[in-house]
Amino acid sequence: MNLLIVEDDRSLAAYLSAELRSCGHEVVVAVDGHAGLRAVLDRKFDAIVLDRMMPHIDGLSMVRTLREDGITTPVIMVTALGQSADRIDGLDGGADDYVVKPVDVDELNARLHALVRGRAWMQSDSDTISAKDVTVSPTRMRAWYRGIALDLPKTEFNLLAELVRNADSVLTRKMLYEKVWQFEGEPAAKLVDAYVSRLRRRISAQVGDDPIVTIRGLGYMVRA
Image: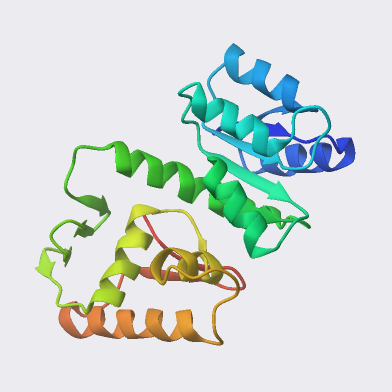
């Protein structure tokens, strides 16, 4: 992906840019909101990692300006402000996701992939999404694995759909908790793991195996 990092802390900006480049991304760094807005006008980015607290033009003002100008580039806001009200302000202002410092780069990378893939799905005219042998129709609440129609309860279906929508991207337990259960914060102990286990058992009982891969220490994924 082609990423823009807008961060006035130069050491943090250097760290994030180096780590995200090591993940295979192209990265441009802007040191404040003015430079960030100029960069967006100069070239197209797949996503923006935006610090909230900056001098002159803060992150909230910058993302509002982008949205008012019709620029829909996905934005992940990064901030030291972790209260629920701060998160709501950021999302209401036009950010797509919100990460609290200190930043875990693996999670940030996973969220970037999920955000860009999710945006691509929302802009697609297709009724179905697929990943290798799995096909899901979110509008019809139907799923197939290796051509076999799956009988899944709503939560397990939504869990599978989220994994397929973000195929080849690791979704952490926290990300799945936010996307599938629509709750913020850390998931209840073992909740996500329990539902993933149920989903795998249901698919295996109907087909013989399942497509879900456990990434130890991180979360889960489905291969594209």
